[in-house]
Length: 427
Image 1 (spheres, helix red, strand yellow):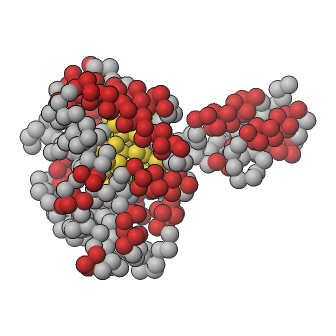
Image 2 (cartoon, rainbow, N blue to C red):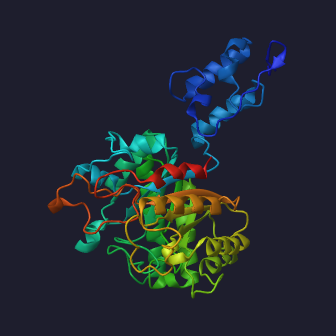
Image 3 (spheres, rainbow, N blue to C red):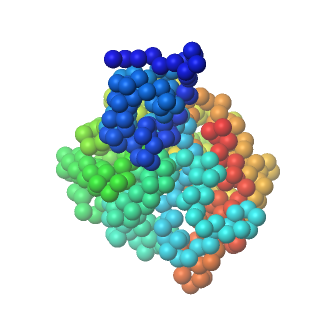
């Protein structure tokens, strides 16, 4: 039954599109469903060459059962992912919108749909954080962005997926910030019982994924922990035997509920001193290898203020690459100030990149150039790019303090030039 179809005596070649649903929409109804399989069967049976352009799903120059298999793969596992991802962690977007934030482009014209606008600038992925129960966080943390419970994330995640973006879910196994300084056990979980905590990690991860999928917000990638360079679920998770057990149970839940979702282990490029190459992240991934952890992607945070210049970034990436097998690497967080230095800046690059719109832009250009020297770096996410208090009354400000590394100026809501440079990572 398999036919090699010809047009004008030559094989029609269609270039495969990695993330475009249109290539799988054989019948052209705007959706990828079983009806596209039925249509493709019809074209095969009737040797209908008039539909060649919409039927060579896998782009190999033929219309065969392999094209039907390709559609089935999409129906079962979701759309193939782009080779590279670029985007941002927009976890606070809902709150800014609720507050009445006014977003403008760099020329001052109003942006009516900020979610769509990111895509118009070439972004193809978004990241959202999730806390176990942020109601237990301190008032200070709540006013600085700890608000994302499961209901919030399901709603925002669905918006992201419906808009056509790849979705990265960032699990904080905590009620508040989880980072190299804080990895607090959720209040409702046992604090020092390792066996019970393993079950808590598994059950929570499983439930979150089940509810996200049911809500139409299936994550394409999931971080099982946030910046866990020093472990998670402290104090027990500071011990590598326990940490490996927690991460193993998290991965088990992901594989069972959503096998196509890729697992990210996310650390930061912390240096034990100012000497080049002396970082903690390479030790982490060596230990991950030693313990046989099940994961797909190396996730890193890179802030030059804390992790050094691009020479140091290159050295650090080389070290991590050497101990992480052939896994892809993604920069899950990055940022640079447009008006003043980030708090507790250790490496001040203001002589090269002044704290200004232009300085932030040039930093972004050079950072992307540095990352593209490493073929395994496949993702780049700006942290909190949507921060924007413009248009929100002072007494109702979304956050207590402004994030100076946003890609919008909090003062006038104008997009920073760096926003428009991010797409260079995938071009």
